[in-house]
Image (cartoon, rainbow, N blue to C red; front, side, top):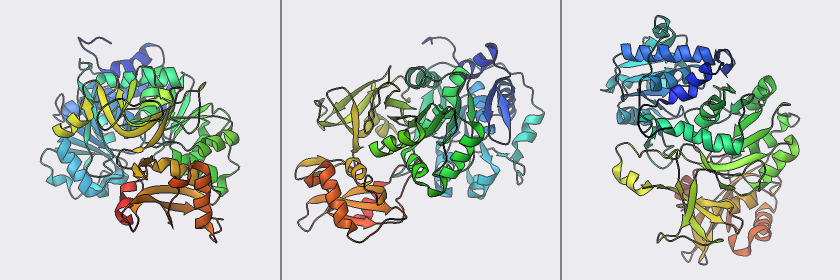
Length: 514
């Protein structure tokens, strides 16, 4: 891709597939409707024409609060085709969060699924920049209806000659400890993730059928279900429902995917759901991936034993768009995040900014071809995160002598016991290997002398026996990972607080533990 001249991501991602003879190939299905690559090209052109008719200009933003249906890729790609910036938003936010984000990005148009309309219906009239609300569904409830708006539009449109370094879309960070931050991604970033991770690690093929538990509004889900399959002309099964074990197994049985993209909590839940213990996940499944949080070694091994396929555990971020550290099909070591994805450089630094040696804990920095341009309207946070070629991830890692990286925790989750760093994830991974424990989260708690020690919150399995369990768990951790790392206090809870991506919100547990 040239650094000069025009480049529109839709030309490479979509139009190329039609030009190469895949117009009749199934691109997306959502169990209700289907889109071939040819259909999607026409529908995206109609969306582009509609946005132009509604008065939206190049570089202006349109927000998307949309479930994963075939409408999503049509709107997302149609906006990019017109040089307009789509902003997919988490479908699980509150009214206050939506009000903040819609005002922050100054969206001119809001595309929203009918089922999600009640959350924003009463506040959209108070947003000065928002001119139109377009509802995807059967009843627009007084707003514009997407199908009606597109019905009269032409399927011819001259794609806007954008630049490779021009913002193509924004993604908002999860905002687990505050309001979300808008990350501006460029037209070149989509291809950057496909040509590195998808091609060189995942080995995605044209005959693949992809199923992602992570939704399209997440960076991880956008790559899994849109960028990667479209990069090779593959097919994606979209899921508009919550990704429960029952839902995912039903889709696997119906569509027989070859690649399943999950997250650690879902893999664990699918393994331990008693009602689904005989499910096999289809006959074509050849590989799975995991991101969002580090995959415990016990979960990876159990999945491989039951389904006969590996999980490629990796780590990515909204800022870097997809996975930059990963295990690969011929190089898997469960319990680690693997090695740098080809095309990415990483380093570990201490608090002073000096690089650390093998075996030492450091913060992970990444030099990525897919890095965002920065945060919208947050200069100080942009400068702290995006440092020239390098992006600070906020993750603590340790590198072994073979060049593999093992996750230790978020920088604000790590703490020292007796002067030695303790990784919450390491303690949690030890706890869940006990047969009574389903999930665990570890945070620091001050003892009577004011010294920090590990405190664990655990979710027990349905058949767990509680008599003598606390002491048994403490001894179990001591034997697994070391005497000083065991949790001094253990609290049994019904559920752990999590983000929509399945990440444990340890800060909520820390706030309640002190």
